Every structure is written in C-alpha cells, then in structure tokens.
Length: 112
Length: 108
Image 1 (cartoon, rainbow over the protein chains, first blue to last red):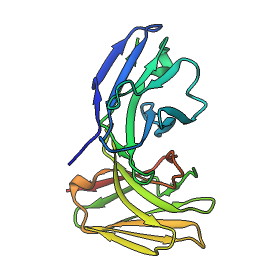
Image 2 (image 1 turned 45 degrees about the horizontal axis):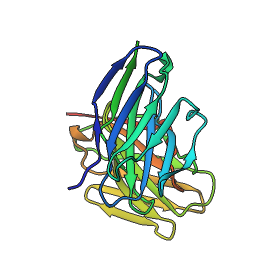
Image 3 (image 1 turned 30 degrees about the horizontal axis):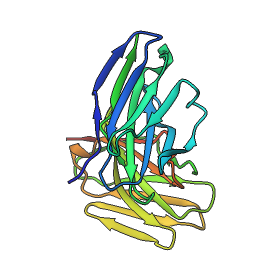
Image 4 (image 1 turned 180 degrees about the vertical axis):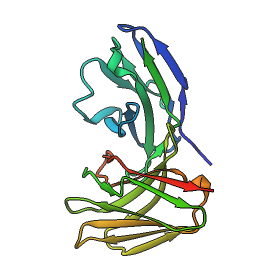
C-alpha cells in the first residue's frame, strides 16, 4: 500500500541553524500539507500546497518557513533560522482530491 | 476548516469492551473524518462520513453523524489493547483542524 515517507526521523540542530525536512507524498496525490505537534499539544496546521504554490498557511508559518516541491516527488519544509520553540514533531500529509489525508510518520525536530 | 471537539478527553476501558467517543462541530460540513494517533506518531485516517450519510461501518468501527445536532460519534466494538491511542475528528475543507482528541486506553 502506498505511504507517505519522511526523512530524517529525528533531526537535532542548534538555534539559528537552517533545517530542511523532507517528505515523499503518495505519487498520484495533488494536495500536500505540513503540520506540527509540540510535545503534549494538539496537531497544528502549518501550510497547504497545491499546483506548485501555497494554497493556505497558518499564522505559525511566518517568513522563517518555506515549502518547495523541487522535483515532482519530494516536498520539503525549510526553517531558515530555527528557534527553541520550533522543537516539535513535523508531519507531512497528502491527498488526491482533498478528502482523507495520508500522514507520514513524522520528523522529530529538536532545537538546542 | 472547522474544528472538531472531542468528548470525553480520556477514556479507559477493559479489552473486549466497547468505546464510544463523541465529536461536536460548529458549522455546516461536506464530510467528517476520524483519525487515530498512536503516541508520538503520525495520524492514521480511520473513516470518512459524508453529510448525507447517517451511519457508516468499517470493521469494528461504527460512525454516526447527526447534522441537525452537529455531532458525530465513533464506536469501537470489542476493543483491543492495540486500540490504545488518541482519536480525533476533523471537518475538513482542505486543511485539517484537530482538537485535543480523546485519549483511549484499553487495558488487557
């Protein structure tokens, strides 16, 4: 069964460093999302991406964040200058037509 | 997208018992979805019910939808220890907005 994959599973970085989180959505899906979950808190929407552009973003998704689908398969989330409060699990999700979303296993980002 | 609010926040049952979780939402919907999250892991889509459906089954899962009351319920029958997880409802229009969920513990 097709699945969404994410790499790395765990990323440790120092405050102020740039990180890139990678996702490979299900191949025929058209809509892509990033969510995050701070430890002990609920899952929060960050950004949605469709037709090679951002379709919606939350207040969390400020200028430090960017997304890209560079080669038609990978979907990346970049944080330019990480802060301590960016420590969280980051989940990628995809869907074909906007109904059920398929989530990846997540990347645990730890900012020290 | 409209946030779903799950109730109860926590539920603890014995293996073999049924578990019922409820969800309320605020405005009109096209569909309502239920997801499961095992501790610290990704969310898994369980079931989708459309606004013109009242009940839907999938294996041991039964979902009901009452659009007049803006509520839904998820019933897990004959629960297993492996059902221990957090359960969320979502009423998506694109992005998903999650509530705090119901944390279900199934004791062996």
